Amino acid sequence: MERIFNFNAGPATMPLVVLEEAQSELLNFKGTGMSIMENSHRTKEYEAINSEAEALVKELLDVPENYRVLFLQGGASTQFAAVPLNLVSAESHADYILTGAWAEKAYKEAAKFVKTNVAASTKDENFNRIPRIDEIKVSDGPAYVHLCSNNTIFGTQWQSFPDLGDVSLVADMSSDIMSRRFDVSKFALIYAGAQKNLGPAGVTVVIVRKDLLEGIPSTIPTMLRYDIHAKNDSLYNTPPSFSVYMVNLVLRWLKNNGGLAAAEKRNAEKAALIYNTIDSSEGFYRGHAVKDSRSLMNITFRLPSEELEKKFAAEATAKGMIGLKGHRSVGGLRASIYNAMSLEGCMALAEFMKAFQSNNG
Ligand SMILES: *Cc1c(COP(=O)(O)O)cnc(C)c1O
Image 1 (spheres, helix red, strand yellow):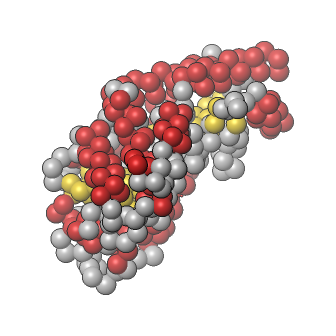
Image 2: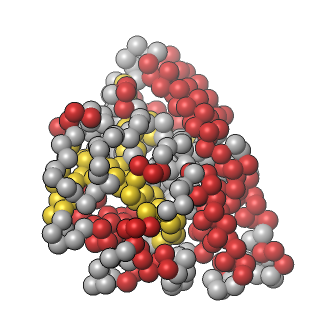
Image 3: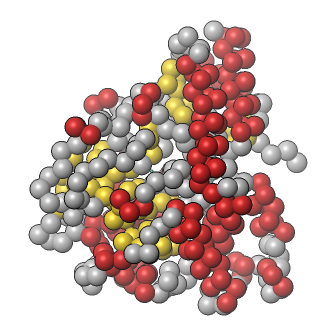
């Protein structure tokens, strides 16, 4: 069977070697006579996976000693509530930077529970860029400033993280975690749903500074409490064990392929193939994101008409490139090219774009 090039935004394409490895041990995991998904999460086999995955997150991202790595459930969307409930007291408040639909959802969810403030927003420009540092107005003493590192729907990405002085940064990194290097110590907390860059849906990685685990209110739901999950090494209740197992295989794959320095290089090369095609199309393809805010993970672009956009998606599908239809809030097309999308996939798309333009331009 032929594998297709899957440009879906999430759940997204997985490294083929990881799928093959999972397949090879699906029926009999390391001589246990059963699949890892049939195994108890209290066995030494599962505990080894849980701790290897934690160690690999720390190693790949160079996470400092004073942080914990947790594997939780409920997707990034659950973190929209968990973050303010854990970190903002009744006397305090939180700031949000609005750069897209997910950042806005995080903000609206937090506003249900705690006092909030919008520190910056590019909504008036249909989120086509990341705000400049002078546009960010941090309020007086927020518990944290929340940002979304990569805006999956709009195709923008923070090129570097803002230095806002003595405030805690919290980031939703669901769609670009492990795609590049960055300084974890700039953040109080980072969270990411796995289904874009880390593996299948079902598990959310949370990286939290240890001092924040003190003083979490005992009145919030147990399953949302970071201190409870940390104390139990992410084994407070039944974890999404198969998802964590898959994430562990993906992290091993990343490590075996040169870690984040190499991933970053591959991702820049892949994205350049497509952005260069857009930029040299003399206006046939128009990128949604302003150039200095372009995402290396999600490339959003328009064609001269909606008919051509439909035709483009249909012809691409016929050529084995799926998932290119853009989100309705931006329209047009979106190519999601996470870590697991190959250079070959991006070359095929760039070639197709050129051919489509010469047939329809
Ligand atoms: C996909 C996505 C989410 C939502 O994740 P769920 O796991 O479906 O809750 C949140 N934030 C960003 C940046 C995303 O890309």
